[in-house]
Image 1 (cartoon, helix red, strand yellow):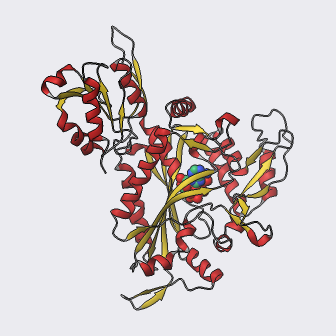
Image 2 (tube, rainbow, N blue to C red; image 1 turned 30 degrees about the vertical axis):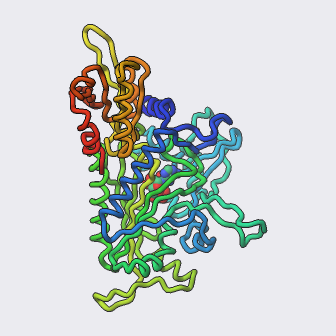
Image 3 (tube, rainbow, N blue to C red; image 1 turned 45 degrees about the horizontal axis):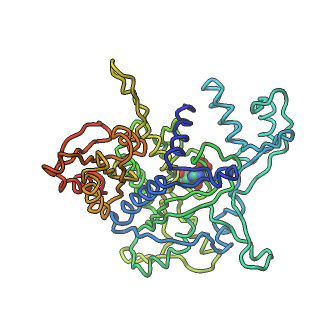
Length: 473
Ligand code: ATP
């Protein structure tokens, strides 16, 4: 529900995960900055994806293409002509809406069957680009967006989502370039470079992570829909005719990746696309149940040979592969897996966030804990000397020095130990160790587990491996 979602947003800000961008100037709409723990959590998610894609698949390699690309790229890919959403403005309030969101939100307020019928009607009109029909539908249903009475709508227009800018100092049409709206095209244009220099044999994949930019019409819901965001994409090149089996393979493989993080499987579901994009012959979303409902986190698309063929056409360069097994030249087919890093971050945080009531008959108590997968937690270990004296900080510092070579550690000597534990619970640190007077005698420390809050004594020399075992991937 919205309250939980708001609590998570506040928590992310209060504990240094996510800040509104340029907050001292009142922020910038749908743009966010990652703070000290957020940046590390985001990096860990990216690394987890990168390792599972490239290191664990011998036939997938990673690249890092530029954000700026030759402008013809976006003509070939279809983005100049059709990467747009229909929008409508309220003439009085000047508020702008995405037509599909407007109607879908309204449909949500109706009884289920009626809502579904309305959405189906909308999808037909969208498919035919029947803007008059869509506007009539909005007016007939008196969709008002919180305004009472009749709304004075503008006509519906297409709004291209790409940001454009000028390359160099000369401003003419030829120098107009775009910030990439997806990372995939950087992979397609490098297909032959990688295939040839890496001596790759079909089937093989190219993976990439990086920023993408979309001038979203309505960007709401925190980091779920941003104007600047990061994608993790992989294009898998296959022999024509084998795309269906590879599509199934990647569908299952990607769900397994999500489940490998130990997140409740009941919160995941597949959503097959009925209405396919012009380039796709099959498409499915992996959806996750956020506090605001089931939403897309990742898309798996069977993109046929559309992209490579288009680039071949526009660049007049052959983008083909000679398959020695069947002695044939062809343009490979592509299965794509595309996940938003920021959306995966939001998923991770939503799945981890818990407000726990720890009250006993004697005492009211509660805590906020982020049960982050230990592999992804920004801090792996916190080290606390029980007191600031008697040589305890020195022993704690020795543990720090040994462990920080291997993983992120946090040191703190202020405040009561219970308070220090709670702060680590709030940022999701899976382990805390406390150095006390007994440590000086028998070289043991107390290790405290985030999820169970249980404690046990282990030898100082065992701390590092204990943490490594649980957090390495
Ligand atoms: P939507 O329907 O939500 O606009 P989409 O279907 O256009 O998304 P794709 O183009 O398939 O999304 O992009 C792949 C992934 O990139 C999405 O599954 C999502 O995780 C992420 N993504 C897309 N747009 C945004 C955005 N504006 N902010 C954050 N992540 C995004």
